[in-house]
Structure formats: C-alpha cells, structure tokens
Length: 142
Figure 1 (cartoon, helix red, strand yellow):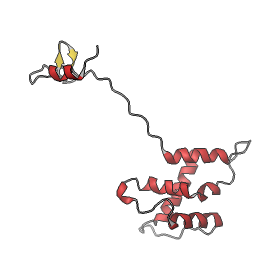
Figure 2 (figure 1 turned 180 degrees about the vertical axis):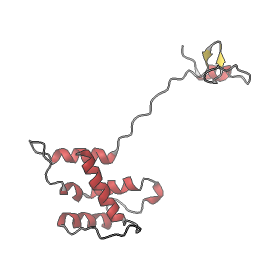
Figure 3 (figure 1 turned 180 degrees about the horizontal axis):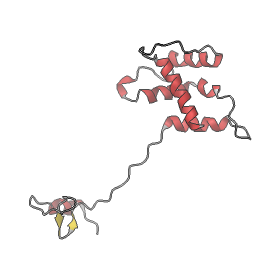
C-alpha cells in the first residue's frame, strides 16, 4: 500500500502508538513510514577508473603490463592523485595545469625523480605523497 506525503503528514499525531520492536509510530498496524529505502547510487572512484582504462592500454596479448612509467607521467593522473589525497575543498592549492604537477611529470619520465632520505619523524613532502599515491593505486589495480 502506498501513501501520499500529505496522508502521512496528516496521520502523524503526538500520541501515536508505537510498536514494541522498532519504536516507530503505528496507525492501524501499518507503519506510518512507508517510503521504501532507495539505495544511494555508488560513486565511482575517478582515480581507479582512470587507472583501469590506462592499464588496458599498456597490457600486451599475454596479459603482461609494460611501460607503466607512462601512466605515472600523465599530469591528469598525478592531479587525480593529488585530489584523492586532499579531498576537502579548502585544500585545493594546486590547479590542474600547475607547474608543480608538470615538473613532477617531467622529472618522472626523465628518471630524475628520487625519494630523499626522510627520518621517521619528518613529514613527507606533498610531491612524495602524490607519487606514492600514484604507485599504490596502480599496484592495487594490477
């Protein structure tokens, strides 16, 4: 049985009896709350979708991945990794075409990017976080 919004609002009263199981107001043994639960649509993870598409491009006939450095080289992918690290809107310090992302992309493809020795108590620089997130995302999808 389907109720309209108006009939539900009219049927609610301050002294409506409640059920012993759920504590919901009842009226004539029919729950007042009859709206079916609609599942929320799943939000697709943009970063994982991007990696899946890119991995298909670098897989050969025998299902071996080659040239994965070119996935790390893409500025769109590095920016998506940055957005995944900083999902809160006030942390949008870097823009998609920023020189930090472009320089990082160029240093990766030229082989000049290196992880510096960090002590256990020091903070990891943002550039290292972006590269680590990129590597972890690729390895999770493989």
